[in-house]
Image (cartoon, rainbow, N blue to C red; front, side, top):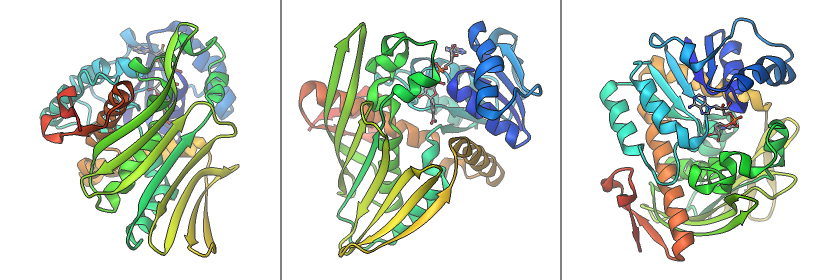
Length: 363
Ligand SMILES: NC(=O)c1ccc[n+]([C@@H]2O[C@H](COP(=O)([O-])OP(=O)(O)OC[C@H]3O[C@@H](n4cnc5c(N)ncnc54)[C@H](O)[C@@H]3O)[C@@H](O)[C@H]2O)c1
C-alpha cells in the first residue's frame, strides 16, 4: 500500500507508525516545518524507539499527488473537509479522515459523501475503537443479549494527557481543542464514545439515532470556548434509549460501555489496566465472566489499517463500522447535541435531508 498522511501531529505519527509496521510506503506531510522537525526528532523516536528513514517527511507543497492507495487526513477537524475533498481529486483507492469528521456546522459533509461516492473512493472515518478486537467481541455478545433495556457509553478523560503529548501548546486556546465550533471540546474530541454507542445500536438492529437531548457544560475563559462535559440522552429509530457521557475533566480516565439486557449485561472497558481491554459478561446476581484483549494504543491504529486493507480487498468498505456514512451519522448527532444544549430542547434527526443542518429540527 502506498500511503500519504496529511498532518504530522500526534495522530499523523501514529498512522505513519502503523503503516510502516505493515510494511507500507509512507509520505508524511505538514504545512508547518516545526511539525516536521518535531516528528523526526521528538515524537516518532520517543514513541516508537527511533525515526524510520523509510518515511518520506515533506512539506505538503512538495508531497507527490496521485498514485496513492490510501490518503489519510490527520489535521484539526475544521480543516478536514477541504483536505478530504482535495484528496479525492487525487483518486486514491481509499480515504481515511480523522475524527471528528468535521466542525459541528456540518459544512462540506454532504458534498464529501457525494464526491466520494461519485469517485468510487472507499472512505473511512478514524473511529478506530469500533474495529478493535475487544469491541468486535463486545458487539458479538451484545447481538446475543436478550431483551435489551438500555446502552451506556462513557469516554471520560482529562485532556492533560493530550497536552502532555503536545508540550508546545500552552493550553486549550492554542488549538482547535479549546473551541467547540471548530470540532474541539469534550463532544468533538471524545466522540469515540458517541460513535461506539451508535455502532452497538446498529449491531443490535436498533437503527440510527433520531432523538437527541443534551446538556453541555460550556467554558468561555482564557480566550477558549469549549464544552468540558457533554451528557447526551439518545433514542434510535428502533426505540433504544440510552446515554453517552464525554468529558475532558476525569482522572484517571474511564472508557467504558455497558449494554443491559433483561437477565444479563455486557461491559467493555478500554485499557482497563496496562495494557489490555476487558469485556465482561455480568449476570443480574453479580457473577461476571471476564475476557482480556492485550493491546497498546499503537495496536489500535495497526488494527484500523488492517481493517481498511481487508475492506479494500473484499470490496465491502460501505458496510464497515468506520465507513464514511457512520462518521457522518456521528457528526449529525454532535451537531444536534450542540443545538439541543444551546436551545434547551430535544432535537430530532431526519436522515432524508442529508448531512446538513436541515436534517435537525426541534422535537
Ligand atoms: N483516532 C484517534 O484516536 C485520534 C487520536 C488523536 C487525534 N485524532 C484526531 O486527529 C486530528 C489531529 O489531531 P492531533 O492531535 O494529531 O493534532 P496535532 O495538532 O498534533 O497535529 C495536527 C497537524 O496538522 C497540521 N495541519 C494543520 N492544517 C494543515 C493543513 N491544512 N495541511 C497539512 N497539515 C496541516 C498541523 O501543522 C499539525 O502538525 C484531530 O481531528 C483529532 O481529533 C484522532
